[in-house]
Length: 269
Image (cartoon, rainbow, N blue to C red):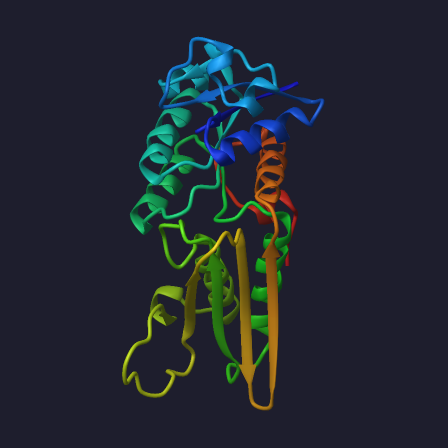
């Protein structure tokens, strides 16, 4: 049975992931990290109480959870994710990261930790469908003539703090890889005023925020006389929790390295 812990277990995503873990007979929820200490079961959120979670398994020290878990699932904030990754590498604990908003420097640091012993699945979106979309976008970009302009549109709830979303940037990287270019050189992340004509070969981003939208992403390939649109719409955050647990189950026993959901789903070209 695989021992799984959760960083931010009392948060919205943490509670969904906890429920998803317990849906699998081969997985055991061994606790999580929480900024708040709990001494009584009745103090826990109702959905965690329903899972018969022992308050003693909720820790503030990452090392304590790493000692109990084979794999930890993390949907927290970049500083907490990076602190946990350092401890996980030192303790040999696997890590599944769905945190968005990591800087390029933090992503480089994560890659360095993976090269130095950390087994990690990192994906801007853990949904199974969106990762199929990522593979399709790369293939479409590779197959289509460069005359097809690429634009990425995303929408999320009004409380999301980073833009473009990590998933939108992931789609941009997939499109850029298909064109064999660097996204950093091609991305246009804002347009305002008299911008002039569209730069050939650029990859544009448009960000929408409002309401309670879980996540919607579209990649548009606009060519002469025709247009292709590849889209994914998330109706529930449970898809991210289910994908994260699938990644954790896959990661068990894998050697150190930085993996993606393409690896988990065997989405090889």
